[in-house]
Length: 112
Length: 112
Image (cartoon, rainbow over all chains, first blue to last red; front, side, top):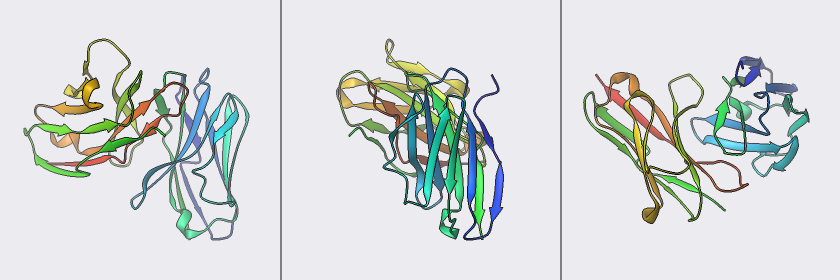
């Protein structure tokens, strides 16, 4: 398996634009996580899905953020409208029930 | 809610020095424990994990961790660090069907 695949690897966008981050989890994994990492706040869990169902979205900062998992092999994290303070590295991770999480390479988002 | 505490967020040490990073989790009972490493500019990778059995766990690159149930701890150790061990280290725990919980991380800098 190629591991967790995220796209794009880098995204630069202007404030106010919509941003969509994509994630393909490892085949067979039943949990998917979206994290945000910044120097100031460290690693933050935004949302996680179990069997494609959102279980805990309490980490989603505000209504501008939304995440979907339409099937077991794909998830998106959308920011609309984007703001400079959303600049961060966004990681997707997937796991089986035992909890060992496998991380993607991340998407480095810069909002100018 | 489950939580993970890591101490001494920033650690600076010289090559060949010994490293120990503390990790405490917040509850008893059956728990799966993990240490992840994030090298500069990269994603999180699994260093080692404990599910059951021998409480002294050997990981990659000479790292080990000891599970002490009575102390709710899972400290990470390496007898002699190298410059290439400069990274951020995250402890994580998972209990039952709960999500994987990460600590805030330890930034380790090894001076040549």
